[in-house]
Length: 420
Image (cartoon, rainbow, N blue to C red; front, side, top):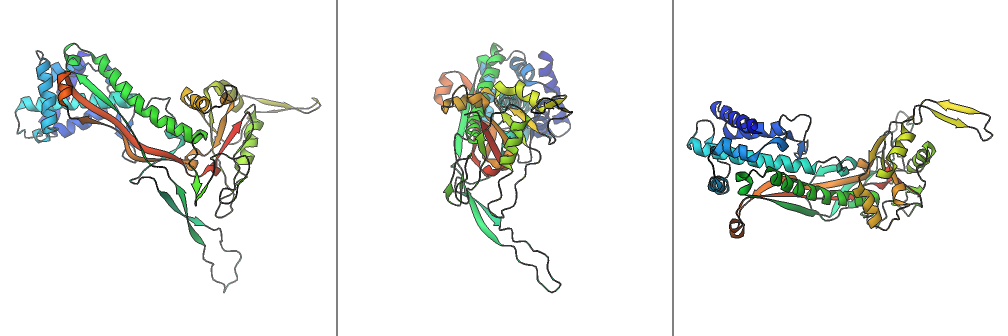
């Protein structure tokens, strides 16, 4: 829309006049697009808080607002070339050293870069990507190796006499094996005709493809880990499948799976009993999951909601002479997460039948069971042009990338129910 380009130019002029310059403009632009950061410094997109939908921004109008209404392909190429040569032109802040023309070029470049960032984030954070809801995401700077911890042996004090000392709690080292990090990325390219012919839809499509491709690769790895297709769990050198229907030797003496199709609330209760029958491998203390999540395949959404959220539940005795009615089926609060077809298709790819795959469901505290080791959070960075790019009239290149790896941290906090 034409007025958005003028609005952004006025925002830039305000920041220059008030001494905030390019840095202030970039910060306000990201805020208007709803781009922020979480506690780990990873970028987030707050759709409800943004003042400008990036999909409504017309790149030709942006070029007209900052480069002049008579701009041409050479103007766009020169503007983006200056960014590549001199960076963000941060020296043109406040008391401007560079001429106004160069300051406008800097604002144009920042606007296009912010737009690319916002459009790519829009795709990367699409609702169908649920992996981060099911994993603790932790920023780290290591590759593979061992996640070292200290294990309590449970030896706390009993009823002591007045003169007796408190015993020392026994502690020993324990570790979980972590897979090597994985690196994924995609490239966004802008042709000068994107601005001349107003091909905003092509820019949006390119950003969407890049953001979706990177997000989907991460989602596939997370899905394979949570579903038990990729088994990474190894504690103190002893490997085990993520889900076990019979206990192994210590420290893998846990059971967290059974043949138990989700048909009514009794199926959930049976899953609870198996899940909370496990104990901590160090202390032997009970494991509890007071407010769990339930993960289901998309084919079971309606049926599961009818189990979790009925207005009334009626149950008859074996003889049918006694009818019991309650107003709630579950005492504990449960968060229902419906997987996308991506997760279902991962089961099919792992040779689970089309009869059994829809019936698989998972219960537990997923963020205690699984972790995503984040090395480089999702980001969009500009890249230099090559001679080949110039020959193809490419004027701008950005790389969307993400670097990290999912793994099973403690399978005792999650349960899998199957039909087969």
